Length: 133
Length: 134
Image 1 (tube, one colour):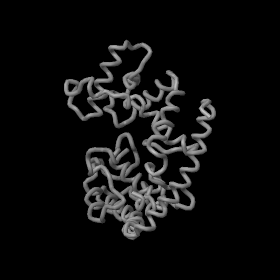
Image 2: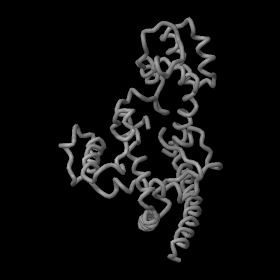
Image 3: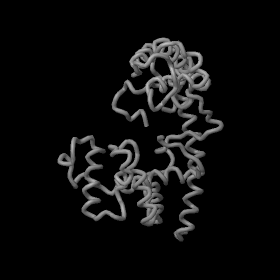
Image 4: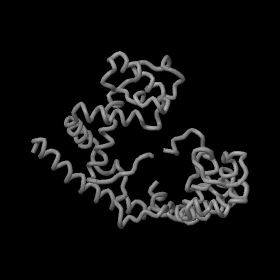
């Protein structure tokens, strides 16, 4: 990977290139992310989860169904939200339909992953970042 | 991210040899409309080829369209193959050279990690201070 980055023309004199796992010790990184996650209120949570779930990697619903890409929507009941989560989970596991997955596959990581992504970027004080188009 | 697409035919890797590039471009889906025009909505396949060519040569699709106005997809594909090969030749050779130089790669990674560590330490000190933990 490092050889590929350098071969594509990234200059290590200008850019900081590193293996993420070599930077912060595991325990400290978990604590850092936990501390940051404790500062995240419901609104950013909802926004980041919406972003996460509208990522192209997820099974897309129809383009005009914008609301469909919002898992947590104010007008939706808890039961409806759980059902949609199950659909998302099925898609993320490449399962054919919801019957192949159940709640046992759910974990907090599914919800907190956007915080981890944000923490990994913010820790290095970047003001711009590139992510999948 | 295109690299997470299931179909390997959907991408050309930096390390792909010439033969693979030929295969991928030749197999690229186009349409049966004659002539070459840039129209991402009506002609996504043709426009994709033009976009790739444009990215490799630096010429705008509008300029390319004039040149290929009377050509067919075969001619366009041939030129796309050569343009992609030209663009990848240097990085591919550089990759082959670099991957043998383990010591250099390790040094770059060490230097980078040191710089990144300093920056993130500063951030986390500030986070702890603002939260009231220090």
